[in-house]
Amino acid sequence: MSNKVLTPITTVRLGDHLPLLELLPDSNPLAWVRGGEGLVGWGVYATKTVTGPNRFAEARAWWEKQLENFVVTNSVHGSGTGPVLFTSFSFSPNDESVLVIPNIVVGSKKDKSWITWIGSGQQPILNSSPDFVENAQMQWSNQSESASESEWKEKVSTAVGRIKDGSLAKVVLARDLIFSSSKDIDSRPILHKLASHYPTTWTYCVDGFVGATPELLLRLSRGMLTSRVLAGTISKTGDDSKDLALAASLARSSKDLAEHEYAVRSVAEAIEPFCTSINVPDSPFVLHLANVMHLATDVTGAIAETLAHVDAFTVLEQLHPSAAVCGTPRPAAAELITEIEGMSRGRYAGPIGWIDAAGDGELGIALRGGEIKGNTIRIFAGCGIVEESDPDVELAETKAKFAPMRAALLD
Image (cartoon, rainbow, N blue to C red):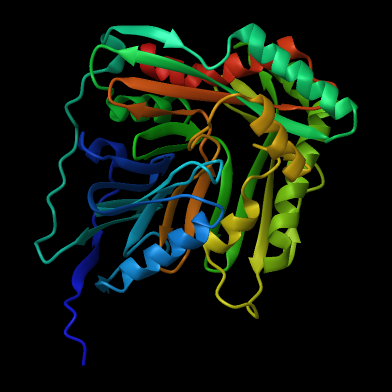
C-alpha cells in the first residue's frame, strides 16, 4: 500500500459573475479572458519549462505526473474546472515553453463562476480593484528592433523572390520592437486596456507574455474541436463608410483569399486524422477589430470516439505551426524563416492558453502581444508573404498590428 500523501484541490461555485481581470495581483498573474469570460490565476504551485521537438508530449507527461499528486473535490464540473495548467509554448522547438499550475484559479462562463484552490486551507477571499500604476505614466526610452524597417522590407523582397522561384507558396515574416521603462512593467494595466479596446479577442498573460489574440488555435471541449483561422488583413481608417468599402475589397482580394486558403487548409488537414467529421465554411467572414480587419474562418470537427484518448496536447502537436504563422508548405516556410527572419520569436506565435485535467482546453496563437522582462517589453507583429506581396504594404500592416500593444503601453 502506498503511503503517498496527496494534495487537496477544491473547486466550488461562486455566486455572481466576477470581473476576472480585477482580481489579479501584481505577482505572477495568469489570464485567458474574452468578453469577461474565461480563467484567471495566480500563485505558483508548480512550474516547468520544456524545449525541443517533443515539447508537447513532455508537457503532457509533466502535467499528468502532477495530476497524480492531487485529490480533487469538484462540485462544479465542466471544462476549466478542477486542476488547470496555463501554458505558453514557443514558436520554435529550440526556444523554451512555459507551464504553470497556479495556486488559485477563478473562472467565469455564461451564468456560472467558480474558484479552484490547491491546499487544505479555507476558500480564499477574493479582492478586486487592484492598485496598479498605469504604464503610460512611466518614462519610456530605448526603442530598438532586431531589424530596421528598410532591412525588414529587404527580407520581404527576398521572400517574394523565393516564392516566385517556386520554393514555397507563403511564408510569414515577423519583426519586433523593444521598449524600456523607468520601472518594472505591470501586465495588469495592459490586460485591462486590451480587454476594453478589443473585447472580441482573447486577452492572455502567462509568465510575462501578455497580449490580445484574435486567433483561437484550438478549443477542445467534450469531443468538439474548434479553430478560428485568420489570414488576410487590411487596416481600418476609423471612417465607417470607408471601412465597409475596405471590408468588401478584402473579401474580394485574390491575394488575401489565397493567403487565407493556405491557412484554412493547413488547419483542416491537421485535425482531419482525429475527426469523424469536419465543417469548413465555403467562404470566410470579415472580422472587424478596432485597428484592422481580417478574413476569418471557424473550422470545427467532432473527435472520433473510436480513437484512443485525444487531448489538447495531441492536437497541438499537429496544428502548430499553422500556415497562418509559418507558411506553406510548412517545412519550406519554417526553413526560410530560420534563414532570413534574423531573430528568435520566443513564445510569439506559439500556442498560449490553458488545459484542464481532462485534456480539454482553449489555446490561442500568441499574437498582438509582447514579452515582459523586468522593465523591458518586446512586442511582435508579422505578415503573411505571398507572390503578390508589396514590402511597403506589408510594413504598414506590421505597424497596424503593433498598434494595440503600443497603445496599451504608451497611451
